[in-house]
Each structure stands twice: as structure tokens, then as C-alpha cells.
Image (cartoon, rainbow, N blue to C red; front, side, top):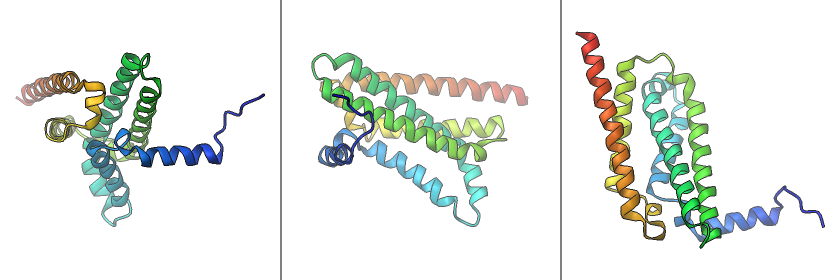
Length: 183
């Protein structure tokens, strides 16, 4: 018997039913807010002053989406590698969700690239500062529920906060370097 690699209507319907039946596996405050930023950028693209607004916000959105995509695929990969032997279906579902988040981020970045060009180093530093503030709020206040997968909330939260601290330290060093360059 030869199996087709293309999904059937039944496969797609089953996937949609599974996502709606298990929304917490796929949707969290982080996903909603970050998707909202992307949707907002799309909506702004049809407004009369869109070029100016998108140009101003593009660097920050690019960095937020970059952190979103990379963080999602990193966590879903960790879950897959760590727990696949004991719970293969759940870990594969999480990995597919991470891939979906990575693709969403990549599409958003691709749409924003024309508006993110030709910004100064200082504008990119401000964008990075705002992106770090956004993600620090997301992690510290709203802590995405998928951090707690299989009881690993504290460990994941610690790793993410350390990574944010490293990124913030790099940001401070870049600001310091930029200030010295202006002197």
C-alpha cells in the first residue's frame, strides 16, 4: 500500500479539530500578543500614513518577532529532545507548534524588511531596548504556559531570564559603545 505525503481533507479537518480542542498547546498570551503585533503591522500597511508608521516600528517588530521565532523553536526543540522517549505525540505536537511560530515570525520579518532598512545604529539600539522590555514583560508577568510543559516551569523560566539578562547586558554595552563613539 502506498501512502500519500499530501494531507487529505480529513487530515486537515482533524488537525483543526485538534488545535481547537487543545488550544493551550498552541495558543498562549505570548502567541496572541505577538500575533497581534504582526496583525497590527498588516493593518497599518493599508493606512494612509503607513510607510511612516511601519518604518518607525519595523526595527522593534523585527526584533520582537526574531526573539519569538527563535525562542519558540528553541523551547519546542528542547521539549522534543528531552521528553520524546516518554511522550512522543505531545512532544511532536509541541515541536510542530514551535515550527509554526518560527514560520509566523519569518513571514512577519519578511514583510517588515523593506521598512526596517536604512535605520541608524541608535534606532536599532532603541528597537532592541523596546524588544527586550516587551519580552521581559511577557516572561516575568505573563509567563507563557508552555514554559511549564512536564513541570519544567522553573528551569525554563530561569534559562529565559538569564538569556534576557545576557541580551540586556549586550544592549548596555552597545549603548555604551555608541555613546563613546559620539564623544
